[in-house]
Image 1 (spheres, rainbow, N blue to C red):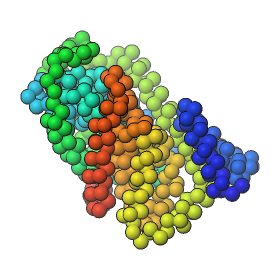
Image 2: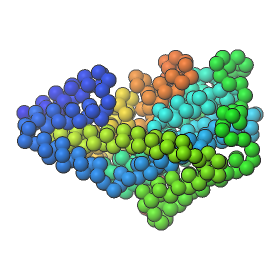
Image 3: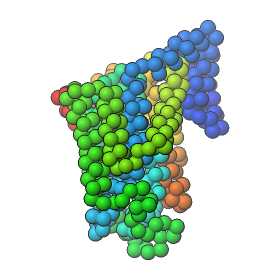
Image 4: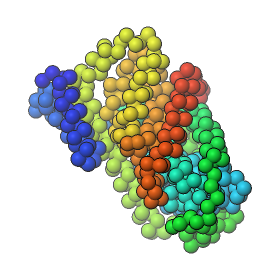
Length: 443
């Protein structure tokens, strides 16, 4: 069968299976196998299902994923989120805007480690939402700010999205981490300004926080006493973990995989200093790591099969030929690709989107003269925006579900955040890609 016709049939099948609620990994596997059969018959299945899928997950670079996830499990299960939030609650009573900025930074860091924007959005909705409401945040704006914090997990290193992109495109993961530093600072400054402005516009004085806590987290909820010693251990440990990972990768002292192992070890020491380590702590951390890692690997495996089908369909070559007239205007070409990705990230999980489309997009991007590192950074930024916009907007649904408020009104503020990211930071990075490559060039 003609590759283009097979591709169209598979896209319809893909949409139907997705609408039926099948897991994205399963959808990718089924669609890829059906597509391969339509083009080459059953003779191509051994190469597509056995060889391609095995080598997609049996690679050293992917060992980075479970190690960073293990580090996140140690951090999250030590309840450091509640402790740090309590600390900021104590020192920022007169500055509600700072509370929102801290929520985004904390959520972004923890989400990047866990690899699950939706999980962090849900966790922060339980911990942070009551405190934001007490400081005058409109409940819909507060929930959208929490969803924004979760979506930042896609851009703040060490990000699972960056690791997957680096593995799929054979791009240095260490360089991707370092390249993201300047864009992250730019985005944090931009959204922080937005938080302060929208906080002043939407400020409400409402003491009837129905169904929500009206005081800072108590000792029994934190699992530890919120005293100076625990604050110093928590803040100091996080700074050491972040600094060790960044400096170690930047200076080439260790690889991203080794950074994950060191980060996990330091996180375990931090949890021990906070007296949170016991058999149940270790058991829950390991089970959580296995579950999340298996989910990510399953998606990678499915995407490798689907990507193999895309390759044999010759769609990448046909697309390159189709848009070749735009090669003379690479910025316009990149803008069109990013708009397409923005809509894809609205409806499909980010890791799956990258893995099933990168085989088509990367040849186009490199042919247009863009660095794969720049493309990877822009993709992750657009992915963060997609998590905040309807119709799917996973971070928004997660936070709104925990808060038990209508997601439609949360999407209003979430979409504002998304447009700020897309319309402010992306054009700057497109016009000045040196902002992305400056640090990696000095590694």
